[in-house]
Image (cartoon, rainbow over the protein chains, first blue to last red):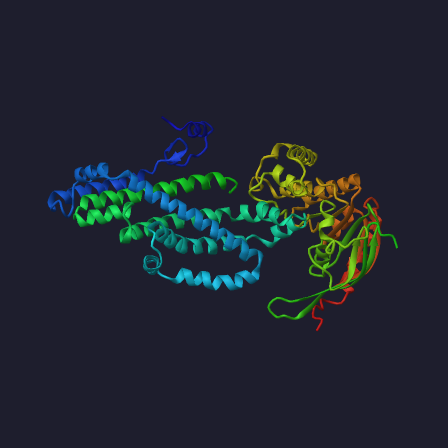
Length: 265
Length: 258
């Protein structure tokens, strides 16, 4: 069915640009679907010529997908979510403190940068050596990796608020809280959302690695079992689950972004 | 001397220039008084310390020497006591891009803790007075420069300030819009009875606003204190020539103090 607004534009004699198909207000990613479909076909063709323990067919992969433990998926998602919320809270507190007290920033930032420079695999080893509890180990690795990123990103966002706007609001004599709530926070929201996108992607990878090394639950542990059983189909099935989780998280943040930043040009 | 209105006594402002660290004199010496409800325009070259003077009067900066009293108190020392009593219209509109016109105007009332229903009603009333009844929920990027500056004017007037400041508030607009806004601003300020201090480097703006014109030299010091009647065309023409001559003859910029 023709797009009604496009028809009206044509009736008015206006030029109409080709627009992507919209379903329920969302753009259907035709190109993505076609590209993924072609890759799936290529995989299936390879599966016909390669042995099933190297390249399993889609029938085997779907069989494995249906057999995957849903509780493992939920546990991984819960770990990522809880750790990100805690990391964000710590990052926000650190950024707000550094923004309010420059002396705190001068002392804290070298340490934050040091934390950012440590490779994730080192944090995983430290966590194994330092902590006994599994959840504590995973939580520690996620928070120590994502917290500093939130801290640096949020502080950059806060410092990026123009002096013109700060002076305008200061002239109204707001309280410290009003200054933060009415200017600094709303101005930092675009950076916050970008930081969440980056950290979600990072956290899913880290949690999988951490679970792979020492967990007895979660997607990472599921991958370990699949590896021990030499089941490529199961590894592939878990990989699909991870990609879908990441994609769903990105879409969810994008929806929040579209709503929260609707004031943008 | 009366403590009502604005009193400027031996005001001096020196600051360190960023980068070089040299001392720069922005305000050399200022002494004058502005009566309550009076409308004053300050003219002078760009960079002669007019905006620095306004920042001190707004309470955002402190003087190096001397003082400014507004109704007997210093706006920088008794900072919080001026909440809702002093407002400023800046050179750029400085609207918050994530707030609609209505919410931008209501911002000033939010800070004062005015109840939601009242602040919406007052913000709406001011936007309607300034001809923006159809743009209450428009975001800043959806409005023209003139409309955005109207919103900024509404935001300043909505708190009914005792002292209203305008820092080159109409300088960046096209002449037709600027002239119309100046007239509206001037009429509203008289109607509200606010003491008004408007800083500009455009003589036309000072004459349009009418009232008293203070001519600043460079660095800021009082070169002349004149009266202007916008209706008296011959008088305005004479004053324009006189002020232009005064500014031209003033020593060129001598920012380095030591």
